[in-house]
Length: 491
Image (tube, rainbow, N blue to C red):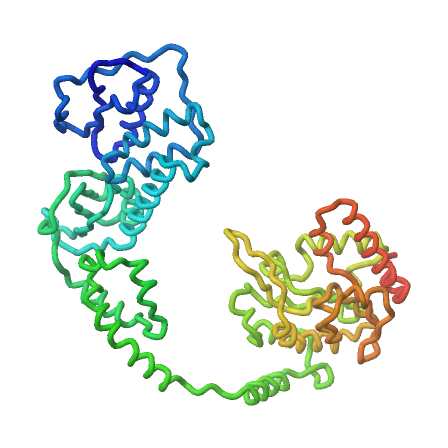
């Protein structure tokens, strides 16, 4: 480390000047300056007791190179925003220690690492609160045009860092956000960052706040009130700047009484018996083949099916497809993501496996009727993807009506259940598929039944050898179809 006789000056442009800190810290570290020798100063601030003794930055020492882990710069960006006066010293110490301890940031029990992470967490929380609790009030600009002003009191020096959020969110407005530390001014084209302001510089109220308070009072649900959770998400220190805050106390005080009134006035739901009877009446209104109805009518009626909750999120009902004279009906579980979007069964990855193995088994898919036990896609969202979820017993039961209609119209000689869900829908069997596989089964209407796996099962097998073995078994199961129904064999 350098043996300079006095403190080394490191001047930053403003309290959250990360770029300034990074440049200064790099130069200081390359020159071998010890943390205790650095006098960090902001703007034109007085150098303090040792102003006269301060020395300029020493020259870099030869042979020194700096490296830091990938997550250090973002940690430093957050810590620089903290109001702790020792934040620059802390980061500089970490920078030096990382040169000999590259994995230091993973040692969460280290005092410096622990303190830096706690400071970063506090800054992140402050950033979130500012984006959530800034409330603009309408004012008249200097030119008489509409403008908006907000007042906020951040805990840390976050104004510059959060500015991009407000510029992107309110790009078409002219606005100012005033805080005691720094202020933001957006004229619709350029962002200006100014000095701090006082509460008296911001307006107290505007005409829109009456509407906002009315809206807040009407969306308040007393039955779901959790005061502790509410205060954790919206701490009381922010209430004085929120127009709706004056309603919080009376709404909480009246919550119990309002919740009791909601319970007393809730509508009486019909009994399950009446709901089932109404569903039977709707079913009977749709004519089956014996009553002169058509498959096209059944498919059209299924588009508006609301027999279970799956219809609320799926894109559309996916009815069966194939010739009504088909000797074989294949029944899968439910549509997948691609089937839900296209409205056709078995066209996604599992459908491609199905087509390929059908061909390998010598069968002609164009001669088969293909459908699913459940007609709507059940999924959960993960990121941008919709991930398949298995239908439950109630959903299978609700869709059994449509599957029964399809069987009535097609009257296949043989039905192939692809997977446990299909077997359950066709027979009510809730045990393992393995116990029914490779057995000679018969449905109540006399049609033969084969139970085998769903093609998606083959896609989920991680081991190549297991996948080849199970595909061969699936091919053998489809080979039985050709033996039982020779019309299905491709020419």
